[in-house]
Image (cartoon, rainbow, N blue to C red; front, side, top):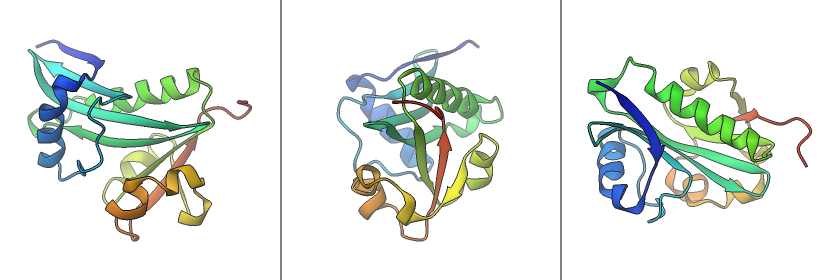
Length: 149
């Protein structure tokens, strides 16, 4: 069965929410347009999702989820790698994420833990950082461009 990565569209929102809820991830602050989100589809069914929300030269990687029936096929890795490539190509400097359960997974993608106070204010002001994720959540960062402007 062929899997396709494509940009999310507003009409994909219900499928994205269902997938995120299945993975027990946050959906309260999803933009209606799903700008910056990628989907993996198998025969029109959404089986994977990840998003990148940009704030100047930094971004927040969020909502990485894969349908349990499709786990083990490196779908999340493909999504994360594609979004990191996009961040680099767009000249972003750092990509941050917030997790309560997947820090070891993101270690393998080059993310490192950082203190909450070391996070740029634009990301600190997101709903995900400031109110939705618990203060005990792990914050991680990966530099994608050392010399970006």
